[in-house]
Image (cartoon, rainbow, N blue to C red; front, side, top):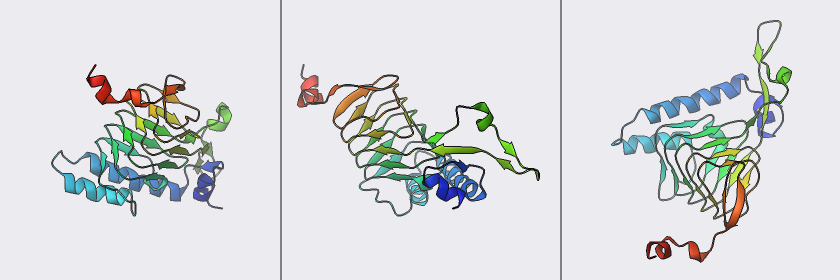
Length: 206
């Protein structure tokens, strides 16, 4: 089993592996090129998004406001009609699956990589020949359809967020969130169900 296969299986792997490093550098290169484009370079941005997410159905649109950082774009699958505001980042180690019609606010991070709590296991190891090794593992994140993630949210590895839920600003999500609820806080907890009474049209007329 290769280190890449070990990573995808959720096992401990060496993140300094050459194959993984090549995938990350390609993702970083494409993000750097994307972030260098201007506000009027829409066609070039879409072409780079197609390189970052080959074979994925963008639906009506896929918009990532620059800057964006994707540690390894091979490991994130995004559904139709996706919008992410500035400083959207994905830290690899596990995979991310995002449903359709998802909105992500500014300064949000999906963090799937996990290091040991023990310092001796976190340290970079050196072989007799000078080769470096850094061992970690990852847990995947799953975000359902029609989810809104507000500003400055961190979602940790192993979390699933159900369809139609809203994660409030500043939250740190460490546990699963069911469908159709408003949740926020650090750690993020469910506050209540979302109902028709939450319609913005009702609120605007108050």
